[in-house]
Amino acid sequence: MQRYFVDKTDMTDKAVTIRGDDVKHIRRVMRMEPGDLLICSDNNGRTARCSIDSLSDEEVVATVIELVKETTEMPVKITIAQGLPKGDKLEYVVQKGTELGANRFIPFEATRSIVKWDAKKQKKKIERLAKIAKEASEQSHRSFIPEVTAVQSLDEIITVSRTYETKLIAYEEVAKAGDKKKLAEAFEQTSPGSSILIIIGPEGGLTEDEVSRLEDEGFNSCGFGPRILRTETASLYVLAAASYYYELMR
Image 1 (spheres, rainbow, N blue to C red):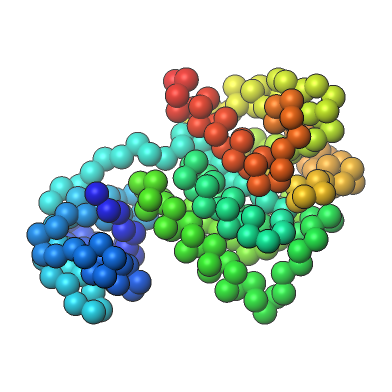
Image 2 (tube, one colour):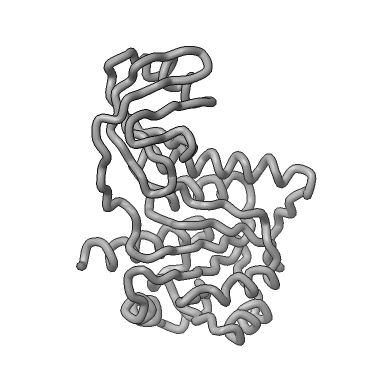
């Protein structure tokens, strides 16, 4: 059943109003008609199975048939702080990371980030990433849409990190040294309901100075398996590992 996110002000226990681009998707792509069923979520913990009452160019109005209890969210809240990569890799990370259960994405300018975002164009880029996160959340039947923040500096990442219970760095030098336990140990020491911040460097990795500064702030460096992963692969690897540990082993 197709899922759509709506503003919480457009959803009550009895009715839902869908606006914006989703109206076009419902009418022209899905070709839905009155009586067709869909799932609506207000991105605030409320999800309902609904039946379409009416459609127009501006809105779709539906009746709530029943509220639905879901268990599609990761038991821990994982934030991926992704060093700005080249090309469309960040879009890929946001899309697939959303499907794998990430709670938040923080793009940041690392020392070795080749890409530097123009301040004037950043708003449009973040809006596009937010749209990708929304569509991926609908496709994967998430109850919440992950937040995509503005690009941050390492200093800003460090400030934000002080609100997290577990803080990790994907560091290839630790992987090269043969680490096989630190990631698993971090999961074992982090209980459901906690928050985890994971730093992923850009294509060239993090510098020793960046790693040192982060470790001074309580971050733990760890390897993600015996192989060296691309920046976009590392983010998805750790999310998949967390999903297996917290959702399939328990």
